[in-house]
Length: 428
Image (cartoon, rainbow, N blue to C red; front, side, top):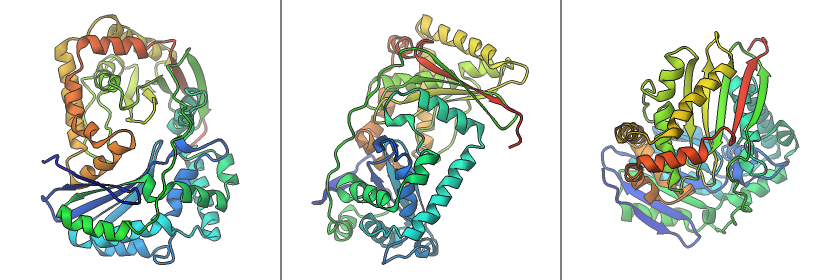
């Protein structure tokens, strides 16, 4: 599959990336905005996610409910997501139906109504979503660990926001957030699929260029360094299962150490998929922690999580504790494996095997047209598209010495948050 892309910036600041893929008569369009929970201040957590919801509540041209039927009628599908660094909206449609997708995205980029009744209705929806999450043990543990891992960076907050903020945010707050961040000058338009770049670029200009755009300053520089000491927290809640989660600071995606960390993740727990929207899976049964913890019945299951982010975030290992063990015993076993990783260089053959698994998962998450369009825009949220094209070669640059240095720098007992979830016996 060709990696040739066409890149253009419109007069209003909208960055456009296009990739022709003629394997099927479909086109996937993604509109990415540089706004997520990283841009939110205390009192307004969850506002980006809520604005995403409001973008489906209609404009004067496309009232609420009309668009879903129109997209479905044309044989397409659409969705949206908000995360730490970004908000994105996408449509994948038959190639000859892409005009509707472009028209609706351009329209709601500037003309969303934020009707007061719709705002109040959606407040109930978002609060209900939050309250539903609070019945999930891993949400409660994730939130507590994430909050403890940062002193001041907005990454400490869950994307959905706090209940208190969701109750106090007003319609005017939401609309002001929308007007500031959701405009061509703060957006990336990514298209992949069955089109002629010159022809579709003209349609893009006709649709998006008339819109006014303005640049948005980056948030105050809040990068946090490695954790200064170990923190331990406990959470009690519904269910019957005990969980253990350990988190360390991880490098930003643009840092060279990120790629060494990717190999570490693959070695310890099996590789993490960087594509959050699907694309295969890799068994973690050959990973070091699976063999030590699951096969020896200290744990029922485990997984690692490493995300490509604008600022340093977290690498987490989450373990479902076996009923016959206490989490403190499982933590001791985890530390024994980490000691092995930090004591001596990993064999090159083991690094090659871990890199192969990471590359395979990366490929699975890049193989269809929707995923190709995803990567065009996603990589721009923390770097450039060249990050995507160079990903596998950067993994090949990781040596045993680089990996050892990275493990010793980041994965120390005095630089982590240890979270334990203990069920309180309540029914879920």
